[in-house]
Image 1: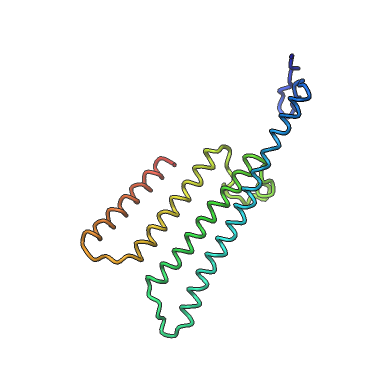
Image 2: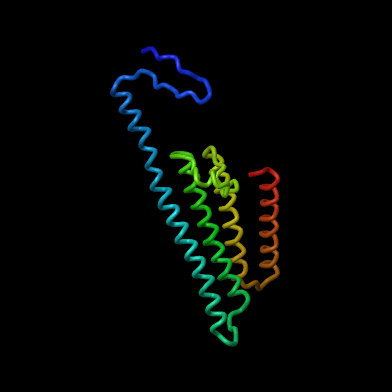
Length: 185
């Protein structure tokens, strides 16, 4: 079947090549299935909201407990562990927001209101799945580092080997972060 020549001038509306009815209906139906990603967008955004609320409640609870007890019975480690746990919630919420924004922009449409207002600050500069993956990987690595830090604070070190293992672990994380920044991962 011959296809009509398409006008390739900038801004020109592309013409759809001649197709039989079955092919046109199938392609339209197939193309419409991309809207299934809206489930991921909606539930990803809702999950992010839940995580932000949970993180905020965790900080609120630690503040309430700290100020209710006149003797400030909470140790510094307990305060830090709770706040770092809240930061974990926030970071995972960010992963979900970036994921939601990214798949919406990749499969449905650009988020025009953010681009017009100029408020997006580069978060929405996702043009390919690799861009989305790289942004998500960076935040996940931060989540892992924060989780590691939280675990370190809650551990008790009894031997010098424990301390050495912790020092080596922190050193390896620092080297990994350095090379990630150097290679723009």
